[in-house]
Image (tube, rainbow, N blue to C red; front, side):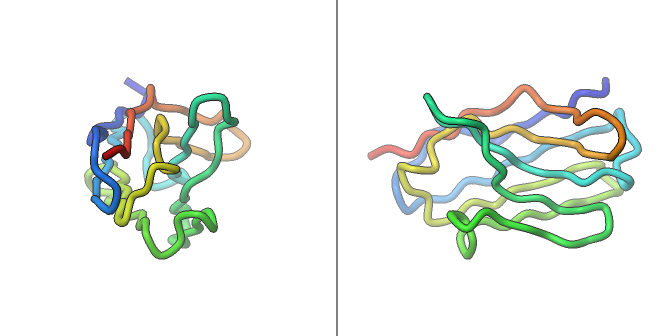
Length: 116
């Protein structure tokens, strides 16, 4: 199976934490830039964080200092630790595997809801 599979979503109160996982056993994982995107209702999909194949990380300004991306090439997995969640973080979170010039590979998404 090439499509990455996300897990770890759910409902949490404001200020809480969640850890998302994405496993992609069907690709040459170490060659891919692995990222997390999110899409809130009525909004465009946006980049949250990316961990490149070369080992660098990048974050959206809105999550800097709260979210942390990590990857384990041996397990072919990427993780997103989300702390200090607020209602604006509510969205479907998608795992993305990127390796130019090939097409991006997307997971099916996992819902994160932040609500009191």
